[in-house]
Length: 419
Image (tube, rainbow, N blue to C red; front, top):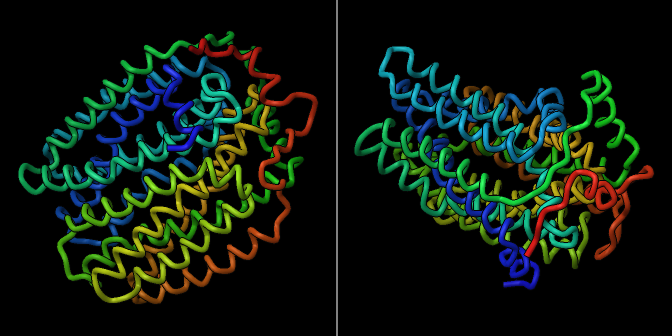
C-alpha cells in the first residue's frame, strides 16, 4: 500500500466517503448488470440489452446543463438528497406490468441524470476533504472501491436474478442508496453558502471558457473522450461476445464483470503513484495501450483470451478516467468545478454514449469481431496521440489559468475539518 493510499485512509472523512461509495457501488453494480440481463430475458434481443447502457450514459450529453446545479447548492446536502431520491425511485421496478421493459429504460435514464449530478458535486466536494497532493490517490481509491464491487456484485446480482428474478436486486439497490445517504450525513465539512445564482447561459460559458483557455487539460479531455468511445463500443458488444463468441448464457456477463472489476482494482490503486512518476500524458498513453490489447483479445475465440482482454480493459479504464478527474480538480477554481466537471463528463462520456448506439447498430450488420479489432487499431493510434500532446512533466503541477487556483479558492468554499 502506497504512502498516499495510507494517508487517504487515515483521513476520517475521506474514509467515511469511501465507505458510502462502497455501499452504494455494490447495489449499483448489481443493478446495472441485472438491468441488461432483465431486458435480454424479456425481449431476447442482445441489441436492446446493450442499449440499457445508453440510458445511463445518455444524460451525459446534456451534462453541462445539469452540472450547473452542482454549483448552485451546497454539495454535501445535494449528494444526500440525490441518493435518497434514487432509493425512493427504484421500487417502481417492483411493478410487474407489460411495460416493464420501458420502465427499466426510464429508471436507467434517471440513474444517468443522478450520476451526472453526483459526479459534479463530488468533484467539487472532494478537494475540500482531501489535500491536493492526495487527490490522485483518493480518486484512485474511489474508483477501486466502486469498480471493485464488480468482483462480487455482478455475481450476486446475476445469482439473485437467476433464482428469484429482478425484484430482489431492485430492493438491494434501494437499500444501499439509503445507507450511502446516511453515511454522507456523517462527513464533517464546512461549506459556505453558494454564490447568488447567475444566468444559466453565463455559468455554462464560464465552464467552457476554462477548458478553452487551458490547452493541456483540453488535450487530456480529448484523449479521454476518444478512449471512452472505444470503451463504449466494447460495452455495446458485451452480450454478443458472450453469446456468439463464448456460447454462454447472458448471465455469464457477471463472471466477466468480476474479471473487469479485478482489473479496475489494480488500475485504481496504481493511478496515484503512476501520475506522480509518469505524468498525465504517459499515463493516458499506457491506458490506451491496455485498451488496444484488451479489445483485440476480446475478439479472439476462447474464454482465456476474452478474460485476459476484459482484465486489460478493466485496468485501462480507471487509468484514463482518474487522470482526467484529478487534473480537473487540481486545475479548476473551486467555484467552477461543478460545471467544468460536468462539461468534461460530456466531452469524455458523450462519445461513449454515441458509441453504444453505433455499436448496437453495427452489430446487426457486421460481425462483432471486426468491430472489436477496428477499436483496437483506434486505441493504438490514441496512444501515440496522447504522447504527442502537450502536458506537464511528471511530478509537476501546472497552475490553473487565471488569478484563482483551486487551492486558493478552497477556503472560500469551506475547508473540511481534518484529523
